[in-house]
Every structure is written in C-alpha cells, then in structure tokens.
Length: 153
Image (cartoon, rainbow, N blue to C red; front, side, top):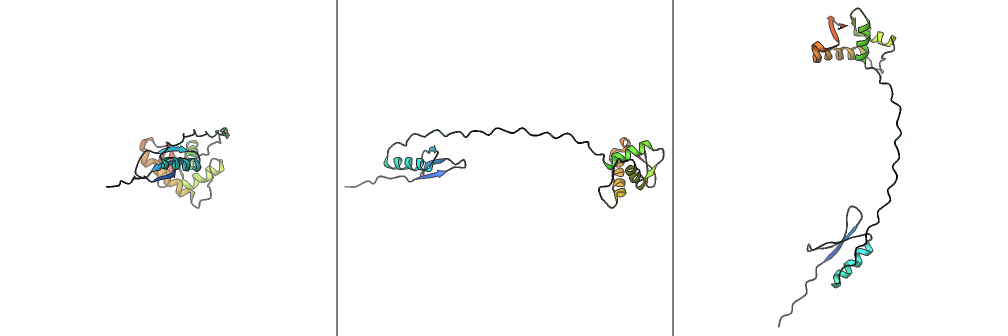
C-alpha cells in the first residue's frame, strides 16, 4: 500500500512598480490580482492555499487628476546681435576696410555689441570672420582686403 502526498504549491505576494499587489504561485501558475492592499492579497493567498477560489478583485480607484496650470508666456526678448553680425553692419556702413580692433571699437560706439568681458574680443571676431570666409566662400558677407583688414562685400 502506497500513500501519495498532495503537492502544495508555494504562493507569494508581490508588489509591482505601480504599488499594486499580486498573488503569484512560485511554480509559475496563473497570477491573481491586482489587489489594492496587501491585506486583500494575503486573504486571497490564504483562500488559494485552502483550495478555495480567490476572492473577487476589486477595481482600483482612479486617482483624480490635478488640473494642469497654464504656463505663463514671457514676452519675447529682442535678440542681441552677435559680434560677427554687428561687424557686418559696421562694415556695410563704412566705406573703408577696418581691422578687428577698429571694428570692436566702432561696434561699442554705435551700441551694437559690447564684449561680455573677454580679454581679446578682436581675436575672437577675427577668427569668426576668417571662418565665415572659409566656409561660405563667395557667399560670405566679408572680404579680406589686405593683411588683417576686412571690408563688406
């Protein structure tokens, strides 16, 4: 005479990322849930362990959405001229070629652009103009008239 033991599956309660509880058999059976509270999930676990059907899953209450606030729109600020744009304006109004130090002084005098505190703004302007001439070629706003001097096209 042989006796057979009833194999009981181990059941555990797990919490997911959204805060809901699930009753999950360790052997990979069907999940039960989601439950709102851990007590509901443990009651369902006890019922399943006794062989009874799991209690009904209660519908989760939807959280009321907060009304969205209207974003305040800021008035559009006037865009400041860059050094190279201000230099193009100065050279367009000038009949003669200028070096970069003269350009920086003329831009400050006309209140088009002032240095934000750099030590050598004329060197930065020089490299920007040379870069534009190299990249745009014939489309550039500047022409190198002589060594260190630029004119408008």
